Image (tube, rainbow, N blue to C red):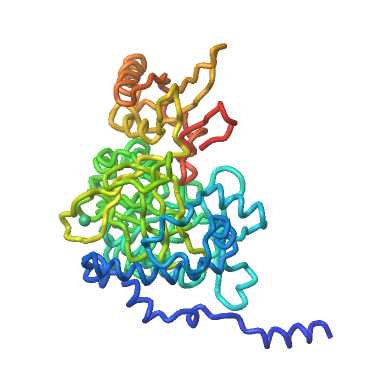
Length: 480
Ligand SMILES: [Zn+2]
């Protein structure tokens, strides 16, 4: 009897089919993927672009008013529906950070109230869940509706095409496959909108690094996508363990989120250009550099990017560094309206040689919440990494430990650095690097040379795709 009832129910309840969930033709016109992107949005005159942003901004605000998180926060700030009429009113809206998202999750577990959908809406819209690549606690969840997922894939395809991916290419993706969005996002972008074939090797704990290199060689991979530390690790494993010159693999291009990492060192190892991008799992692909590799073009048909003063929260003038604050223009499930990501960058003045009209973000200087205040000086671990990468006597791997020592409570940072080979004199290397860090950062740090591979237990570089660089023992034993 029960089985018969279940069969009757099964034959009645119709799930929402993905292929019917969107008007794909309309979407292609609104968010053109490559190659149309390069003849439209990429070169759109600024007034037209602004007009497009205004229209999308108004729809995004209307959608945000349907989400409890924004209703609560905006009402508390004295705003009512209708008060935000255009981009000019943006600064009336209070920005929020990841702490507010965590608070939202704590208020209404397990998914928070910042998404306008819940898993039960899967009955009417196909939904998928991915998360941040968080290293402490539960990762932050994000439900994506088809509109979110497809536009993200298009934005990703634009980035990958700007980075040299062409139809018919094989692209090896060394980003993690699991809850984190990093790997799947790239797979969808490549597969659906570039004509290239994704090779999803995942990070080093999914496919060991030696095997990754063997696959790249045997299958004739053209482009590799990965975190900078992993791209460097792969090249060194190829060269030193497998005795394969990474340059002989014929990799045409590399795609990474470089931040402060030394692009030149990675390009030298692989003999290929390394391209930079910037995005977050909540937002999708915000910006990517072009062939000129001089700043990252913001996808302004999908985002409004502001740079905020970390102290006052006020927008900064062009060229000045501050926190990246993003407003999405395309999201359905969880619109982002003034999300302060706390990554430090600046909008570059002037136009790019490539002829694009899209604004450019400078490289990402570091996370302002990863920033360590050391005896009154702001220190970014990422900036330390960039200085270390300049020294050929190191593998580029490093890990920073901050401690409060002595009765006076003096804050000290020790930077452990891997030396590249046995021909390096650790004493000389230590002195040279300490001097270099002191002159560049205006604060004294202790350097401790260690053997190759010794830092893996701290950073996880051979295993995970998001490496750790800092342990601040003054606050807690949390690793960032
Ligand atoms: Zn350009």
